[in-house]
Image (tube, rainbow, N blue to C red):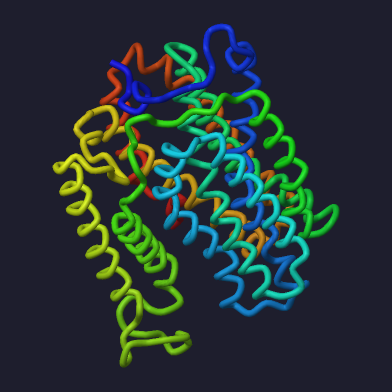
Length: 380
């Protein structure tokens, strides 16, 4: 059975069009697009010490330079994915790439912390337009076994670039300057834009209907934004009582519990609102019926667990390597090479392994494995 959105996709390519003939080049352009946003987040982690030294940043500014991108990205991801289904996935992908490369140039030219924070927020907007559209375009432009291969390449790109990013960032920072950690996105982004425009067919979802679920979009942005804010600011503000150095507090209490309460209320309201609209046959931001499909729900749960483990390590290990072990930026990046190799190998072989072993069993093993923290053996 074809996936829900695949059966509704309208693709401008047909069997005789150049898009079908050049679809594998299109896969390369799509993979390069997603590689930019994944690699950028890990490059910045390695370049942070050099940025602090050059711009004289405060601790709060450093934290927001790293976190504003994630905050904006997470808050807008679902919204842009649905907008792309309606107005055209390739169109939104190209706009997102242009926003991302322009904001990358602004980051490289930043003379102060506030400038860099603002540019990183724009990067988050561009990134949230890129990620969902790349996956949707693969789903719309590939069929059967080719789709499996395309998804494997897409997954390998995410896993590999997340680990290779620190290497590139370390090399650019050590050999040139931290500015090039952002400038590298400009030429690569232009290549991605050209490739997507020439090799990738436009697609949209016929049954999406009018985009008038504005309240659902608002609840989604507030819910995910508040959740991410609470998770990343707990250390700064305090998890319950406000820390002494917290910028704001609520009569001695931290803002973090309030953010979590707001997130729970907004996301619960979002689910109820979407279910109500779906029952009345109105357009929705998220089709909740998809979660009745076992492979869809298990796949999302597994992806969430893997992302928490892998990206949590990738964003923290470079800082530990440099600040605790005394490695330079390039050495810190090279230390993550085994993680990159493992990501490539796992993404490329999981499809073949799933044919010999039950998929649900593999999902359960991944969940169990990821539940164990990475800790050194105790010494006595």
